[in-house]
Length: 593
Image (spheres, rainbow, N blue to C red):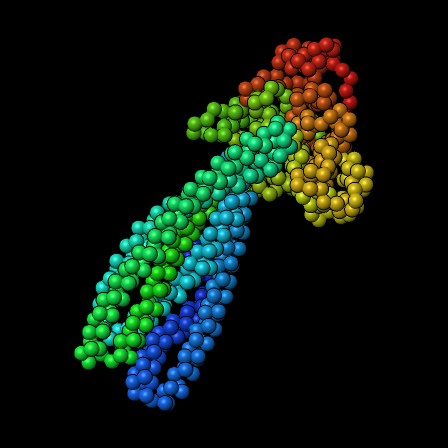
């Protein structure tokens, strides 16, 4: 009976990756066979050492056997090294492919996936879970193959030396596999729980370290410490239960092996005393049996490692088997000219079409080239959801969005998103140089284009004043810059992309008045000649918009120009009064957008 490893179709995909290294695997198997043969040869050499040297007192064997032992151990050492190196190369190559496939799939998953999953949990799968699979492939599978080869050779040697002793010794062998199978299943379940607990702890660390300022501002250090200690305690309990089961395997295997060896010694010794068996053969068989139970015991431990690896691979394939974001149409149109008209036709949208409530309903809207479309309304009205439909971060659940008469689902995602630039409320920057962040959407940009984008976005002066100028690394999420500076870098990035459609999602709402003035100037430069969708809480920033849309509960309840909407004294007027209740209907003087 062999361990039941319960392979699933996803595990066959992992095996296919292993098979892609056929050359290395074949060489490694050759090394394993040589190493196993050397192990078996040792039992024969001991037989001849006892019979020919100690009993027959043959000097020729006295000279030859030590040389043969040295040669056998030398070949075994070289083969073991070759097998280990080749299998580590296979294991690390597979892990590299797995990590690349995981990251490739993660990048292709829809935005909703990232809103549902914890960042720390994804990091844990890419690091901790993949390392467990690496251990399974590089070590567990490698050494299990080696031990199986050794077992096969030693079984052959024992039967060659004396088949009767072999049958008695192997009579207890099936019992050795029962704890291996039973414990292996429990190890796999506990390993899954342990990996989940590790992912939860990683996610917790990511949140609390990223939010260190808030933790300290509210004096919650002690609270967060307790929460972390609770998570480590949970992981500790799972690890100890796993260790308890794993450490029970070896003693049971050793006891069973001891019974088999005792039976072989009793029966073999009885035959030696009766002259039916030579001392050398008896010694060789016992040596081979002792050598045989060692790899069997190691296989039981390796089975536990395989169970952990299979549990980790399940978590990895949960990501790999996810459907990528919005599916591409068979036609995959491209753009021959910049978009002229964007039309929403009876658009409805729901994040969960099966059970959720609609976020947008019956949206009809037209935006022409160069127009500024402002979206206003209370939080939760559906403004961000609406603009997220344009680059197909989500797909409509009813109606359609057209660009120049073509449903946007007929365009390739890459072609569609090349037409769109986005500046969000929260500036998203990377821990690279300021120059690299500006050129993020246009890696082929020239130095002159980068500098021009920085100047147009009012980002050049403060960038040039940094220690290494535009080559200065700006820290995680741009932490070394102020809020206004980060936002201007994002505007420079959008400028350099030079997309005809622009989405501004509350791009100035988090800034102070002084920073807002500079950012608004940069935005004016960015919006020039582009079709722009603006989400704004500050109505002072959109009074000059060509068309203002008021969203309430996912529906358009009002639309028109600023003055006309004020004159109607409906929803827009209420919003305006909430912000400028003490001012005239036309509100305070404003400039820019």
